[in-house]
Length: 216
Image (cartoon, rainbow, N blue to C red; front, side, top):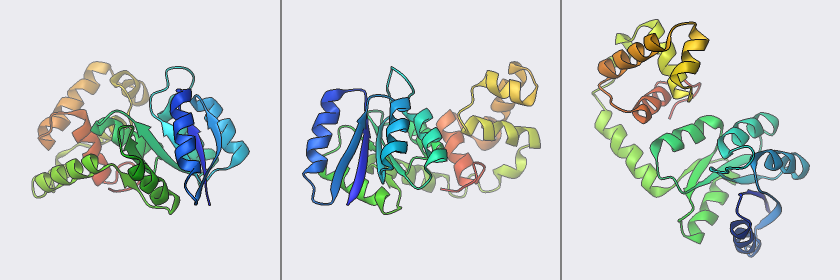
């Protein structure tokens, strides 16, 4: 039996998911929460196998922050992010926060069941459109960036790592004790050397290079 905790700010969504999942012979919803702080408390109370976590919750702690904190408290609990954002940056940030997977709120019910079973078994799960896009980008980058990492200075590698971890330019400047303008200069140099144009591309590159402690 897969024990599931639902964390979503919409009561109607929680009710619908509870009915769906409790109807499955191998799943049981053991608790619900409307925001991240409550979700963490309920997770500590019920110790579920899987937490289905809404990404955007305007009141209280958001899904990414709750995921990061929850993985430190209950590392054995798997977290599946439920989101309406089909966006690479949200995907990478969720993975970095400790989520085992992401699924779109618009996904069919059987896909949600499959995703929960997958993460409960210790596997990762990405919704099909994200998997396809990541594969296309990876294939497109083969042979183009293999030697580019050596072009980065030590400081640029530090900046790249902090960018990939989701820090804003001001936060990076504070951590490295440099000006925001210097951070922006480093970021521009990094993008030029790696031939990239967007922040999600930098995050994906950092993941592939293992700068966040693990590789894609």
